[in-house]
Image (cartoon, rainbow, N blue to C red; front, side):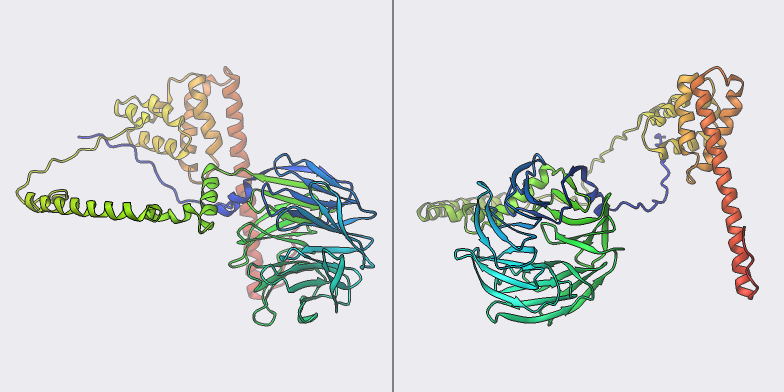
Length: 542
């Protein structure tokens, strides 16, 4: 009779708190904390590789390298606090506002001031480039929104309609004529440059701190107070989602590279990640201070957070080679019209000359006819898999059974070695299954006796680690009693074994105490529930 392998008992899987989504965000490891001189109100990533990011803090803007995580450029041409340093779409220019009302345009390489816009009278917290590359949008505490013409340094549109400070704004990438701003007057307004007026107003219900627009410009997300609201612009500014997962004011919003996840930073020291499909929180990151700004790189490898105490946190995710290759292939595929685009799906004939194609096609036709005639003369089954018929003799294939090392010892009735080999396996289910198999064979005593301190240590250590696990408690308690009965006369001769036995005893004592406390709690709750059902006064529990 063939040997039957040891059956490894399968226990029901316990639900784990860490999901695949959580594991992905946990890969942003090794947070680097950098101390700036003041709070960090804005962080903005360059839209082009290598995806450096601009950090506005105090009276300067620093360009950090995404590779070294160190400042590579410092722009200190501000007379007061700097705000909202954002890159142009090609990553060559940067615009920022300050507390004096100035809006300045800088060249990244030379750090020279290219343009200065001076018509705001109060601090400018919002500056954004328009997609047409010739305009800049700025919003100020003077309650105005201005669209600037870069060559002439003059404002070509001035929007007046907010009744309080304007602290958030975006420009529609698909239609540069549309601008959306959020204000401390608790409203979100849509402005049209062609009409030079507000065409839509949405009531957020709290001072608006941040705005984001979805790709295509059909919806926006506003943050104000502890809530986020998603607005459908195509249906006239209807609120389609309201999210209230934060305890304090949400200060910053950011999309990941694929716009499938929304990051929200808040004064409650947390950054929450939302799935934009159903707007549920899929992950939460905690920080040591109130969060003022959040940024994530377009390639989803860096998460940067600016805090109120001046700390800058940088988390980096290591990208696998498979992910890099998939991203490169996707980029090549998106470059439609190129040679590699037309080479997709085996369409290599597009690149061949017409004459050679016609010649090769005629040759291949002749060869195909010859081959087909040969097949018909040799029989229809040539080149095809022949199915067996009734009188055919079939040879059975016997698959060789590969045994684990502990099964090989068990097959030879070497019970001590079999148990030792199972203890070397990292899976505790294997050890427990081996102990059950030895009990069924009435061979547990021979496997446990005759051990020295070196061979006894792995067994006692396993008992100490897993005796509290409810799945293994019953059998491990019985094995522990047998081990104590066999070796109690030898205690005191090995300091290592004595220490493990003391730890095992302490674990059992803690578990017994916990079970007694649970029983007392259950009894107290049963008494409270019983009195509440019959309407008697509830006694106080000391």
